[in-house]
Length: 245
Length: 77
Image 1 (cartoon, rainbow over the protein chains, first blue to last red):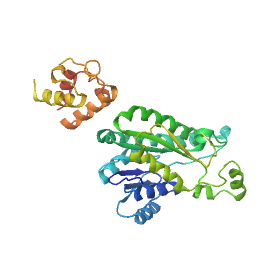
Image 2 (image 1 turned 90 degrees about the vertical axis):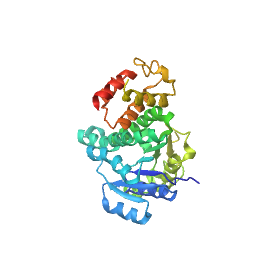
Image 3 (image 1 turned 120 degrees about the vertical axis):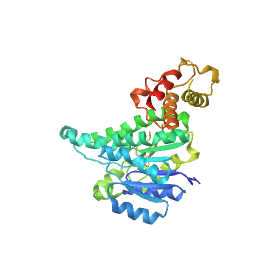
Image 4 (image 1 turned 180 degrees about the horizontal axis):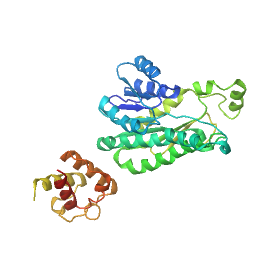
């Protein structure tokens, strides 16, 4: 249904479960994709699995210089960056009273500041093209909070406020900026939870199951499409009803 | 006026959709030519491309009028 032929997309955190599913969804819709992440092997494997229009661009998002260079590398590789998906994120959970400055700043740096840098790096080209899609992957906890995740929740809520502000500034140039906020999704990260932990979480989810990475990817695909041209500054919650916002 | 002025004027006319004779030496992009702040960013981007120069942000802020732009670009070339 959504056609991304001729569009070039940069996806961070593509070595993870959700990022990989996003890359596949955009690729299957016809986009050329640049897969970024810290671990080269899974990126290479994903690129090989996807095919000719998939490229690998490793990047450490805690390295400001590398982050600033990434949009340029992607544009040189593909000709442009029409779609940016900021999906990479880290957690360093701790009770707030015990949370160190380093736990705070490293999460903010990777999740929020690198997103800001990448948005800045792609927006010039999008302004000229009079077309662009930025999709930032936030989280349900950015809206609801979560014990032990003051840093992570702050970074994900920060993304929403930043996205709305950028959306205001560039809406007249055909560029949309939106967030997708996943709930509990089956990934390597949530596989580590015990069955007891999982069933406790699921009592909070009206849908009664965890979400799949493909269900996040479908939301991203929509927001990246031409059909979503009139949707900007919004957050699409994909959480099985866990938080109805 | 110079060739630089003609090229700058052409960009301004195209980008802001104003009459050529409105683009005078002292014409302010925002106050006289109807540009918004995003337009001024785009004008600077267009100047950079046309003349193959880099205009740093602090210099870009000083470019308020057509005359400012011509002067800056002439000296930067």
